[in-house]
Length: 190
Image (cartoon, rainbow, N blue to C red):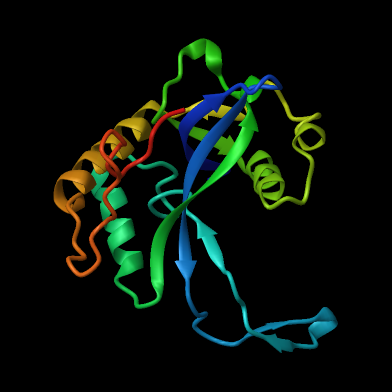
């Protein structure tokens, strides 16, 4: 499991280097289960872990990739069966030059990103690194690959999720309606 699955959301070109926005799934934990300990040379310093997020890599330690929609649904259900845990999405950006563009990728395709490159992208996203400098020495070949089977799995999961849970469930606080002529909910492509 040396790579992170991300979904290609968009490629933008605002006059500079074209960038690819990718979505990844992570586990949000409101509270840690136990007190943590950290310290040098066997000394333990107790601390409370805040903002702990685990990036989803695969369905299990023995399965390096998602092979069917049941694996993905089961994993999400197992995580969210615990109070205070949820599966959320976040985004990262990569220079489009790092994508395997000659193979014809599309929005919604699952890409597998090497861990080291993914960690660079998370640091850039957090505001700690300059994007151009951070990716200056990134390999142009092989660090990001298309995962056709996982693309199918995530597309099937999306269809199921939308059909089963796509209606607004909070009747007390329905989504705000926009003025006539504006899009109603969702997001608009730019």
